[in-house]
Image 1 (cartoon, rainbow, N blue to C red):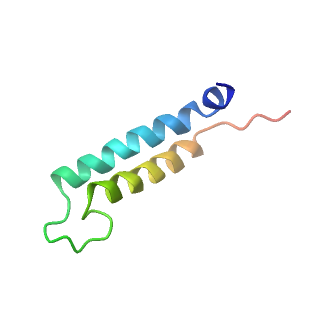
Image 2 (image 1 turned 180 degrees about the vertical axis):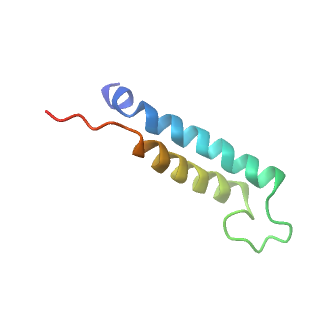
Length: 65
């Protein structure tokens, strides 16, 4: 539980990124299946989750003890 509290912003970024990746696949996507990231919804969602977690982790404040 403590891990979740400390990394709440990153978890929110992962969730939002995966939803955004799925929506990108659904509405924009790749028509012919030749695009590596956007050809499948799983690939697009994982890429979005990684990018969302990375972007939101940059906003996280580091606590110094």
